[in-house]
Image (cartoon, rainbow, N blue to C red; front, side, top):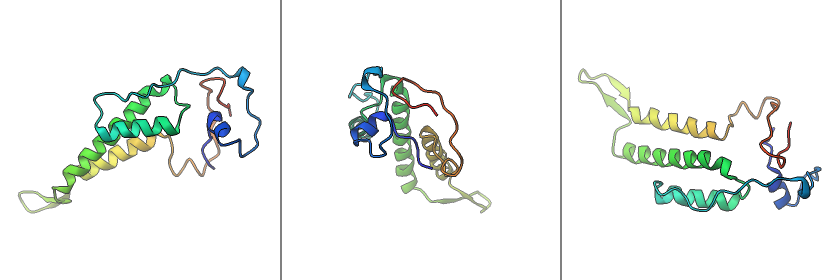
Length: 142
């Protein structure tokens, strides 16, 4: 089962599913996130911010913190991967016992956190949709 698309995206794509959408006159628009990425993000994360804003124009100010969090986590993931490139995947104790480099686990943890931001796992595609609350009148409620 695929994820529900925002009504704004359906309109932009010409409503390919031909579903009934709320009339534009009844839709309350949320203030949009401005295009300025937070200054503390790396240039790569700032580019991601801009790309997301360009592709997902429906993202409102209420989503600003989650968008920032996503960019920060992707920054951190890039840092960890850069550190891992200069290290061994397997480390050894002073007695010669092998153990996995903790940075590998840190990368895995951050990737799981990124997945949770999108609220999508392989289980989501196999179970029936849960009901969710609507954030605005432009959302469809299930």
